[in-house]
Each structure stands twice: as structure tokens, then as C-alpha cells.
Length: 374
Image (cartoon, rainbow, N blue to C red):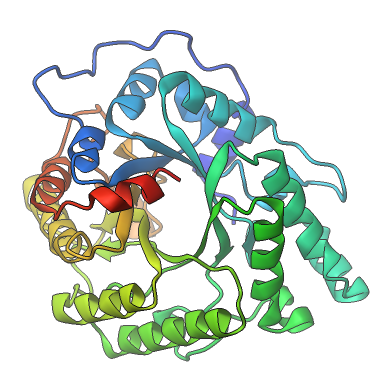
């Protein structure tokens, strides 16, 4: 699905970003989130789209707060390979250029997904049944950025989500043609293309405490155990961290136990897409902001207590670029989501304070800092 945000963004995605960013949003008295996280051996970062960098105020805020930048759209296959064998890296290169110029790292997301594929791909995969349609793409992308991108979500969302009413593998053409082995193909291709890159399986559904989430955590461990048993070079789990301020809550005990299972397997933990949905909350902004911050803090207090956690990434830094709510009722009332750390005016919200407090309270992990630099 192409959102309004994406349609607007891709039309301007590859325009040049400003050489000098406005200083109006910088707050000299604040310690940046990236500095607070780094003090504990943690990398903090955010997703962004290249068109957002044309906004001079936002382009100043992003490198001040974030140490890592994640392409929101520019590394999805429908953007990179719109026609068979025709590769367009210009969008990702734009983000990489900005990151390099501002002292940020760039992280890769995603290499293989059931969604955001070019229109031609599924029919060709089903007809030819050639694994090189998967592996050649992974190899081409990872080799292109070898030594410049050091961490990838290799496979994204291979399991049926908790609200899917069942468990196990998510139906998709990759699974239909190659079976679960498509994950093995992707990880081996990525490792061969860049043996030094950190290779992550990324998904959502392990965070909350419902019975459906219990099932999802069990299936996630089964997936990871299968990969490890087959000597597939998976090195960690991307815990997306899509939370709900007024929906299913984090069960801190269950989450801590799950993270302990990952740590016992020697796997890294990365929070890759943190945000907090507030769409069914009250209209009172202060109440919503408090609830968003509280749920994020409950989540982060557990996640950052785990020594295996090395990175925290939010799915955007400011509400300024959020899509309108999906609910027609909310659209008609002029509702605006407030799920990120900064509002549309780029003013910090309680969620920003919750992130800062969580980093300040996190256990130190100096040894993880070297590994997390990837």
C-alpha cells in the first residue's frame, strides 16, 4: 500500500537537501538523545525519508538527536528495482550522503519483505521459481553498500501477526515458491556479500502481553532456533516496538523473559521501529501524550535492562510527517496522531522526555558499544 506520505515523498525524494540547516530548533540546554544513549553504549536513531531532509528545521533536528538513520522507503525493492534488472540507488544514496555529512550511520531496511515489491516480481517468481530472483537482489544491494551500511533487516515480517487469528508463517509468494528456506537464502546471500554486516530478522508482535502475543513470541523463537540450527547467519532480532497507549499493554514480566531467551541464544536485540499509537485515546492532548510516554517508558525500562539490546530506533522523529488517521471518523474530526517524540512544530513532547529518562536509567554496556557501532 502506498500512503499519501509516500506518494508525496517519492515525488520529491531525490531533491537535494540543504547544505546548511536552520538552527532554530536546536536547544542548547538539552542533552541530545544520541548522547544520552551513547553514554550507556546504545545507539539511538530514527527512520526518515529523503524528502523530509528538504525541511531545514527537521534536517537540523535529526542529526542532533539521532546517531543512526533508517530509510523509510528508499531501500524497499519497489523503489530500488522498479523494472527487472534496473537498479535505482539514488534515493538511498541521498540519505547516505546526508548521513555521512552529518556524522550519522545508515542502517538497511528491508532486503526481503512480502510487501513493497515491484509489480512485476511476484508473477516472475511464481513462474520461474528461480532462487536467484531473491539472492541476486540481496547480493546486489549489500555489495553496493559494503562497508558503508553495517546493519540490515534481512527479512521483515515472515510470521503471521498476532491479530491474524492464527500462528506460523505469513502467506506470501516467497513462502509459496521456496518454503521457509527463503529466509536461509536471504541471510546467506547477505552474509556472503558483506561478512562484516550485522544481519537481523525483523518483526512485530513480541511486545504486548496478550495470549496472541504469547503465541507469537513462541513462533519467533522457533523461527530463530531453526535458523541457528541450520547455521544460517542470523545475528539478532529486530523488535519493531509498535506500541499502543490505549490498546493491548506491555507485560513487563513476559517481555523480560522473552528477551532473556534471546540473550541466552547469543542474539542481539534491536528496537527498530518504536512508536506509540494513540488513536483510540481521548481528545485531550495532554492526556494522550502522557499515555504515549508512559507506555514507551514501560517498554524501554525492560528492553534496556537487557544487555543484548544495543540499538533503539524510532519510526520517525516528528509527528510532522505522519499520515492522517485511517479511521474516517477521526479524519472528519481533524484528529492528528501524536505517536512520536516531537510534535508538528518540532517541539519536544513527553515521549522525548521518556526516551531521555530511559537512556539515563539504562544499564551501561561498554562492550556492546563496539558491536552496536554497526
